[in-house]
Length: 68
Image (tube, rainbow, N blue to C red; front, side, top):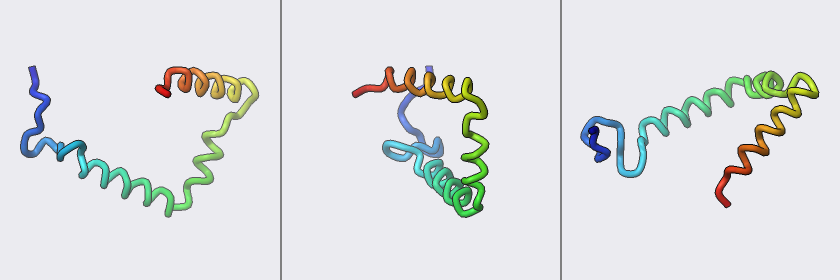
């Protein structure tokens, strides 16, 4: 059984992996600066009434499982 305690070099630093968080933040900032946000948002938008309904239902299902 693998230990859940952090060991040197495993990327865990306190309560999280700060290196991974930094890489993610840098990647997100690069994406925003690239100007690709608007096209990505358009691509992610529903392309039909059925797809919009499916997305809405999935969101409601996800929210129904959220802790309040």
